[in-house]
Amino acid sequence: MKTYRWILTGAFAALFMTTAAQAQTTNVRAEVPFSFIAGDRQYPAGEYNVKSIAAQGPVIGVSSVGGQDINLLMSNACRTSEVNVPDQTKLVFRQIGDNYFLYQVWTQGNQAGREFARSKAERMLAQNHEPSDLVIVAANIAQ
Image 1 (cartoon, rainbow, N blue to C red):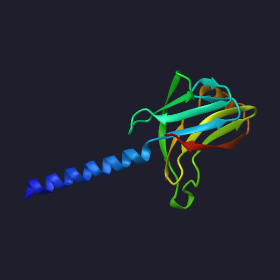
Image 2 (spheres, rainbow, N blue to C red):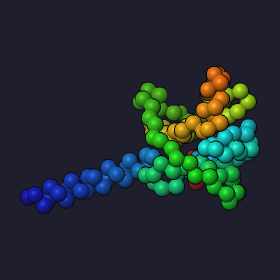
Image 3 (cartoon, one colour):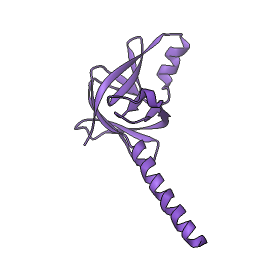
Image 4 (cartoon, one colour):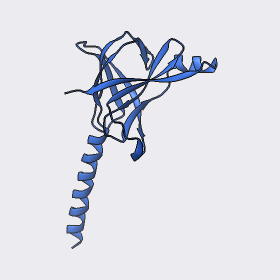
């Protein structure tokens, strides 16, 4: 009887892990109309892919569409309440003055998103007490 319990427990754990991994996978494409900073790297305005490197990992790759250069960034999981589930796939940027910093990635209908730590440049601007705003860029789920 104990063997069956272990088998069932293992099966449920595997099913739960697969569901959790799918919920945390990021794969979006967006046309960003301004230059921005992600990590410690500056990007010109253009079309970008933002996607998970591994299904359950915190590493997110940012690359221009058609470009071969990919920047790897560490991210943290973030969640929203059931009431505030995003109704669109989007990239969220923090704007400080004329500078935009990639802040979060959300996928339509998913309570889980990804959030990026503040870059050195963003921390320096924040130390100067520059006010910040959030700017949302609509995105699409990439195929």
